[in-house]
Image 1 (tube, rainbow, N blue to C red):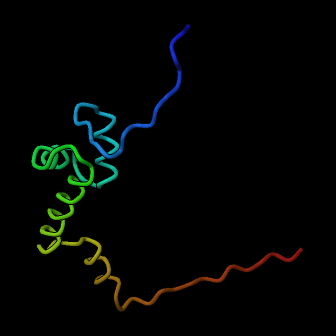
Image 2 (image 1 turned 90 degrees about the horizontal axis):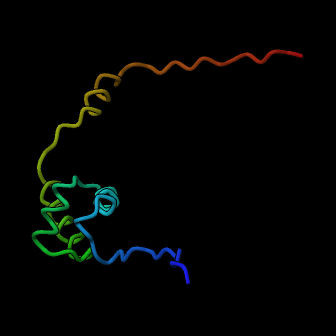
Length: 93
């Protein structure tokens, strides 16, 4: 018989740090950098739940720090300026 062509879904309860595809998937999933992901895996192991918890606690610590928001500057500059809306005329047939 020939080789099976069935594909199996990856085990999403574990993170395989050796696979670039896995790293790409999990960095996007957790919204972190590959370095942050690997550091969390080194700290708590390859369990996705443990890594999620570790990254959540790290993000909570970072969220308490004040951050500069460039959009805030744009909002301040636009305050007081009236918004002008121009109505389009419809062409008559």
